[in-house]
Length: 239
Image 1 (cartoon, rainbow, N blue to C red):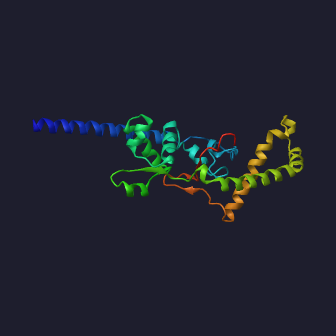
Image 2: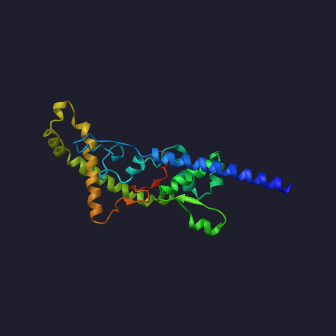
Image 3: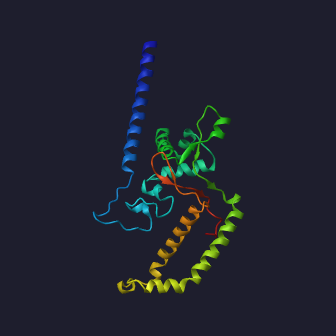
């Protein structure tokens, strides 16, 4: 009986190991497939699209979170759900599996991906309280609406100033547009206003980074360079 029980346990362990190996093999395969392959024609420098996340260019010209998309670090809803759940408070794999109603092995695979991309980290404070468990939390700031009223008021004040500046410069922007041949191609000034604004924003970000007021995108262990954060949605009726 003891020998049969031992054999049964070994068989169960083997099945678990096989499942674990399959999950990791699939996870590694997904990670290889998750890097978006973009190309620029030979002899061309390449166009700068609104976001470098849809371009082969890697000169960091757009938003500092672009590589999150470019490298498909959040390729499916399950990972987003996990980040939402652990942002509320740190959780274990078993707690996440219960909340998501999926197998712990699937959660484990997602956790591995998120840990490798450094979008997730272990919660040191929670593990001090519960040392027998591994708790996970976002590896980026999460702004809680209730805590950020003063912060958001300042952002809105500064946004009003930027919008006012943009309005005051409109006539000059229109003259700059007329100096191009875009109108000859049936494009109107309103068609390029977002481009003007995006370039202004990017130049401002670069100036603030040069002056040490903004932290430039950081390199992570998988080679990706990004800065990321999350915010709770504003109260109903506000943007």
